[in-house]
Image (tube, rainbow, N blue to C red; front, side, top):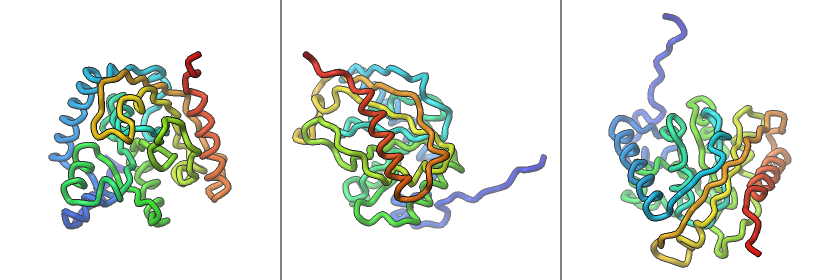
Length: 240
């Protein structure tokens, strides 16, 4: 057999607390079992409480790819993750705000081992962090779930996408899949402490590619604008 190489885990040797917040974190046996159990629970919850339906699942490519969607609720990442199947579900990482989900050891453990989130630190994300995440996306065949608005909408309307999304895909063959999640703001708006029952529907659009887009600030802006337009195009027309 040729071509086989033993690669040490990316988080090998890190202290437990640092490992939870590391962009190189790998699940391991315990983490894989916990995440599998969590995925089953979330799917049951989404079916029972929110009657989640999905259209356009055939548009999802094989990993690696990036999912981008509107962001109006804490239900968003759960619903998008619940729509994935097979290797895409097992390799999916939501990129979550570090200053919200990784501030305490307990919260970081939940985010890391249950929802398999990776932290993005608002206002202090370093260039080398983006390089590490891009390398993991491509080399490890991952799926990133991103909400490029940067924060949840307070009124359900979608804000402009931030250009940081482009750092992951500009000049790369990794596709970006636009999605629109309908009903999440009504079910769990930011002003409510807990969600309420309400139907959710995830619209999945055709993937976009940015292999010819320059890996610079101008290119990042182009990526954000194209992805934003694709997501908006999936939104259902307002009720008359």
